[in-house]
Length: 115
Image (cartoon, rainbow, N blue to C red; front, side, top):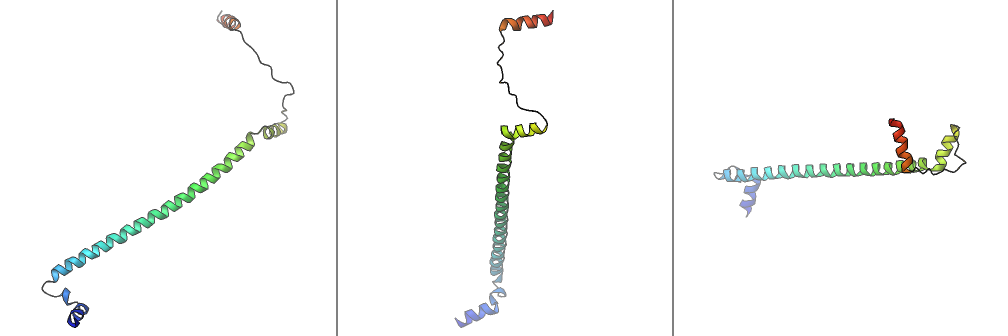
């Protein structure tokens, strides 16, 4: 056993006659390690990108909610009437009247236009 451990420490397995098999295995392990490291790095980059996009979505959603609430406030009748008072346009005091148009009147009106 002492010779086995001593042989590994001196790396005799790399310079012996059968060392080609050992070198192939070592190169295979190095390539696997490089592939694993590259895969882990790509995974971490994707995780960072997902977190970044998630934060951006949250910011855009909050901005959307803010803008929607501003729009609702601007669409309110009281806000519109305040803006119109500044331009000296006042709301009507007379209620609207519904106008009914009869079909005969429509025909005669269009007929008069074509004559």
